[in-house]
Image (cartoon, rainbow over all chains, first blue to last red; front, side, top):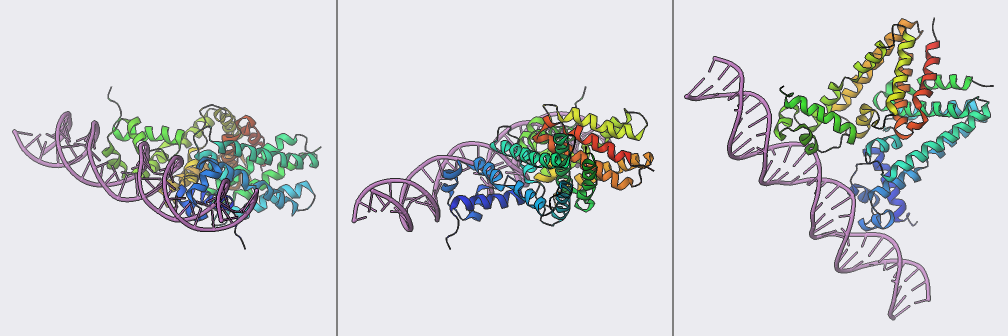
Length: 184
Length: 184
DNA sequence: GGCGACGTATACCGATCGTTCTATCTATTG
DNA sequence: CAATAGATAGAACGATCGGTATACGTCGCC
């Protein structure tokens, strides 16, 4: 019955609160939500910046992409398109608040904030994910195609913040189909 | 030789500083940059929120899209593609900091901040712009196509914050061509 | 001349920010 | 048992936040 340690509780609280209120949430709010002593935060993460960065690193959102694709079978085309079907569902939820990585990258104007490296690493992992699918699919330029998919995903997540009713994921899905039509 | 009034100076200072440091810049920094008395801000805009909102409303970035398209001639296809050529140039500039509208929408988690309405209005104006082009072009679904272009643009601006070297605008341009190939 | 609107300058407000500190409690380990 | 490491609780730090108040100066206009 032992609840997770202070470190894990801090990461979860930070993940929830930064998604809901942005990276500018106060440390006090995070501590309260995590039910953790002030000191533990600085012990484990060195400060707020470290906690934010580690939160992004630990989020492991790319695993969810993998999961969505695995649920769509083996065909790379089905697997990639399933991502946009999932995005349409996610972006129309009332709790949707945009992409936490993009939001963090935009909000943290200090160029050498440790979070920026985590965002870059995340998006490059995603790129590798789609590059593999496109290569299996027989796409002539898997790298370029992967960048196209990434642009579509970021576009959906960004646009849905302002106009979720426009269903940007459906618009993007049609373009993804065009990307997938290039093969051989 | 008279310099612009306090209102105009505030708008320009706020525009510069919010783009460079996000909407969380301090009021003091804006006042200092604008060389304006504290009181004038609250006289003209009622508060920081009003200034931020009015800054977005006044920015008139959609006029720049029009300008780029007008420089590309009359053919709707050339005009739309010119936007992505311009985006490639803009997003690789060292001063590029992302889309100010998307950034504001993500950073202001208070759902009824007056800035949100300005962002929505801006993106809907943009949609109308592209819808007109696509209709002239003979696109079968100008509204849907315009949403696709908007997703591409937001995707480019969002992705370029993290990976400008990937030239997302070029990846998007290829997809825009596919959108424009649908006609009749 | 005198009025009122506008602009400036600066002091000040309470609140919150991220961080450091001291002190106490608890659990494991030798 | 004693020793130590980790966690908790909470006060306090200086800095900054957005916003208000006071006082003074400068215009245009009737």
